[in-house]
Length: 343
Image (cartoon, rainbow, N blue to C red; front, side):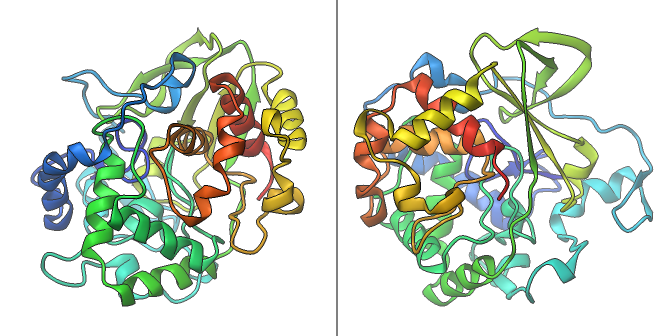
């Protein structure tokens, strides 16, 4: 089975079982990722207050186990464990009416040595998975700009060797300009949907870390948040199936939403309210992307990457002052508030 998720994966994904189920394209990406590690390195360390957004699994961390099956698909049919594990090699499209007709680059490996299909990490409807960005509804020129920034080295990660960023650098170099445009227009025309539920609490359910760093619920206990944010998939099986109805549950410290809202409205130390660029309801304005309802760890990483100087590019220049005017704790609160909004 192919897995996409958080941790050292964060803007892109990996396979839960590296072999033999790993498709050749992604296997090549993983091999090349080692050579690309240095591209993501910058001097800034990740502050402790943002460690939750950049998790790294200890060596030897096992993959998840969804059980022996059978499992019910979104279509109501049953599949075996082997079929579930193989879904990443033949990406299912459970809701074709929810998006435009997909160009080949979205769902298939188009050629030898070509890029991995976009849907392997971002889903057929562009909704993303836990800690991975949703691309649906982003302006097409913005998507193209970001891919070009990965390709040119303008967009890196604050965490040296952050695998998702390095994989995206590889994919951006492998995709053609025509494929880039096709993918951008496809995701821009795909409607967004609400997929994130934010729960403020002092505690979160007990979790276990997957080998690539993202968390999932485990057992019936609970754990203190201690100022951090914990996000988990609503269902491991749905995540494995690329179910477009998958939800993401975010546990955040009490008061984070209100504090984040105040910062978004005031603009923090920079004094630039977010809506002045990102529009009413933070739903996007022109080339400024919509922020409402986005994954909080992804938002936190992007704000810190801009703050640290790891992420650059034409659009990012306008974000440097607002991002640098936020402390790590404030970045957490802004990200939680934005995640709580309806897309």
